[in-house]
Length: 50
Image (tube, rainbow, N blue to C red; front, top):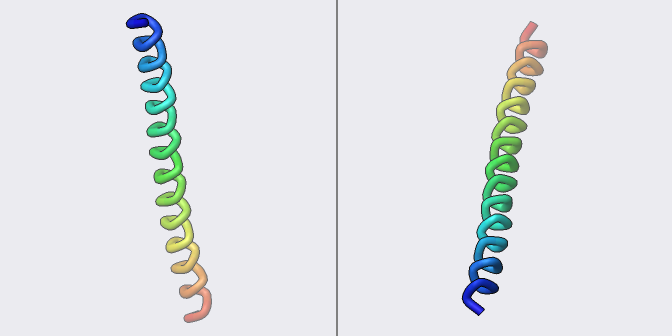
């Protein structure tokens, strides 16, 4: 039973690591989109002023 518990725990920790990796990528993607949005807003505003 101990071996089975360890295997289950290891599998859970791998899926937890994958979840955290995906969450990190998602946050990075979101911040990149926000940065791009702000950048494009600045370009759009500059076009209106000229």
